[in-house]
Image 1 (spheres, helix red, strand yellow):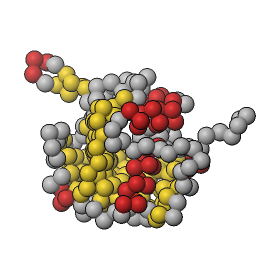
Image 2 (tube, helix red, strand yellow):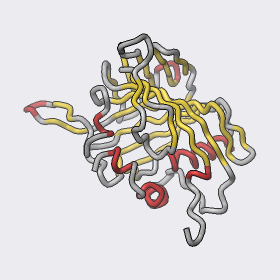
Image 3 (cartoon, rainbow, N blue to C red):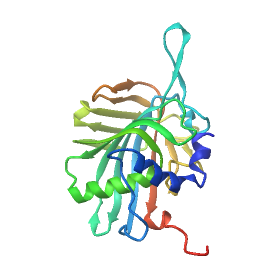
Length: 249
């Protein structure tokens, strides 16, 4: 089952609970009826190690990367720099809040199990905002991670226009994504629509922008790639999207 098909199935909400119960320190969605009302409209500057366009949306495993003796290792190592344009979690405002997800989907995600992820909060976020982000991230990424950690950093650059996008974590010392628009038939960006993106319910389309560099420079899982997949996407989601159906429905 491809990532696209997996994310389009009804397995999403069930895995959201099962997965995050199974992983220490992972964001956990609270039980239905106890979570505050929330909403988030969020733009993501994203890049990964797959060739353009990331085949994970159409295949059962990421692209193969050749190593010695002709052996190929399959992985999708990515940086996702988020900015919440407008949002809230209960009475906690999330307007303008930024966070960063670095991850690797591993070699086979057909069962909804990924390798690792690190959620980095911008240092300006409050404890209440961090708690809200973790809860929402649990719905946006309704999968199981072999390891899931949180960290703090300074998302000091996050900007875009129709031709390029840049995001840096700790001035690029910890993470960096730089995208450049792929030339289309007109001066406007190329956009892929009607393609599922993780667990979100609505988005404005994948704005294709291959990366000039995408790097995560922290710890033993650090990586860096150039000229691989990149895009921007703005998604919209709220607590009503994940509410369980009423009895008898």
